[in-house]
Image 1 (cartoon, rainbow, N blue to C red):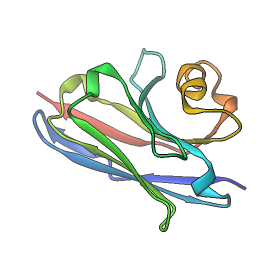
Image 2: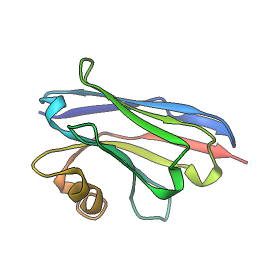
Image 3: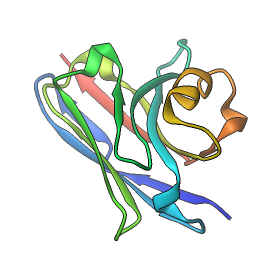
Length: 129
């Protein structure tokens, strides 16, 4: 059974940094597409960054150059390094695992069809101005 546990969220001032982690268990982690998605109050869920099983990455335009996604297949852990944080980055951040298609398919479809993947419980990120 897929289990995903996020950590590392918190409250920071604009310009600060946070590093999110997602500990994965119960599945063949290295064979899965992994991603970070977020949802702010009153807004739709959106992709932040993802990394496929071949290491290819996708980033949302608003976070390019500020966020870095990485995965450690030996530790079954997904990371998101977030620098130069902005108030608009405030949201609940979720770790997602999926398989059966390539990353672009999940990137496009997971926000509206969350049943395509397995989700963690989320970790809150709050950025104050």
